[in-house]
Image (tube, rainbow over all chains, first blue to last red; front, side, top):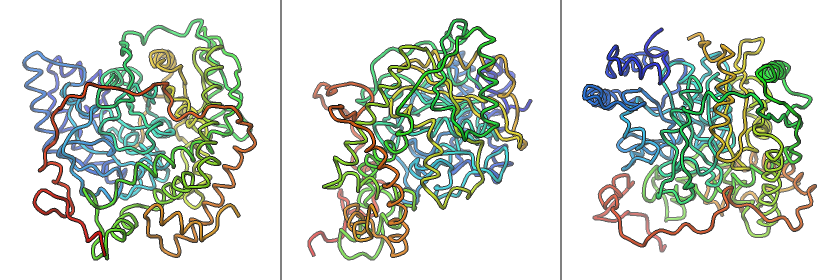
Length: 485
Length: 95
């Protein structure tokens, strides 16, 4: 077991016992990044000097007996998180040289605990993508099979866990962007309830859907890291002022008598046989642990992707209007007048997936189409939320696949954006409903590719999905398997 | 056809995006396909359904109207592509 293989809680014990220093752990991680990231491309920016300064500070803190759960832990952040003094690109050319003047709230909370930031992780450009292929900084490779995508948009955050180039990472999830890459890279990923974690200092994609969450090696780490970043923040008026439970304390509550719903619309013809088998095994395991499983219905599931690609693109077209070359970011040169500067700056700065979504969203919001597309989608969103409320009157948790297939090949779905969008069918409804979901490792395909299991909870039901996930993890070894790298 | 090339050009102008001829062609085809797909929402009767703009039911979030710190002029201008004194510099607005 190398230092870079450890979980947060394992490394914490070693730091506390002074078996390892944070400087040693950080050096080990930086060496590991140096050794393998050339193959994976999980990092856009590595910050060795700052990381070692932070590690020294953590060691001083530990020596003084002041150790928090994240003190001295080497972590990576999706490059969507604003970091003071560290370049923050959001995977885009338009922010290639952007160095933010402040830290966002989630990052500030990690730093307060003395976490060490080793670098900024690759992602789909502005978090728009399901495969990490839309990054200006090149695609991320899946550590389990370098020909496959790691999923997206937090592909770098998931690949770094699988490649053991970060002890834990933060990502964001707008339509599945934490859970789907977690599934494809065999790690744990949590999409918290909307409003659970502050979005202050997180570059906006679709503001009514975006949420921050952890990607980790096991469920214990996910509980720990979620607890560290969750909570009300006056700087995000959509964060919700409800107490953060002690997620760690509740982990061992077990699943005896727990009612688990199986939404019939998620177990359809066309589900990959390996995914189907993994789900059947998980269902059998939960039964053997004393959970009650029953079929439920989420009748509007088939409308979720269409709803999402109208709402998310509409919000994106508005959010991304700020990239105009005036105050920060790329600016086109040799332009005649201001309007041409805007149009050329954006043409040069954005990649094709971002342009396509800005175009779709602008269209959905434009005069004459607003009611037919945008308002219609918002009404269907109400129906989708209602589906979940109804299901949660019957059961405590929902169990579903994360993705219809194991990870796909790089380039496989690039030519047809609609096919790419449809791969998010099982994750998108959770964002539209604003509730929480977790992805946990649930097996491998015949070809050795990871398969994830999704547990969906009631709004602010993170403690329940975490303990349900923990019960599964105790009985399986999937999370202990290491990518061949 | 859900959308024509001329409409795509119009949307690009609204979005302040300069698109090449090749991009206009590609986007026309792709947007047409995506818009045809989202048509499926029309199969649902949503008469009387209240639209959801936000997952958490909340009204306005108020706070006390008290001044707090800000990042300051130098920090605000640190990423400016072009600046002049304490201003962002841009090309002529009136041609």
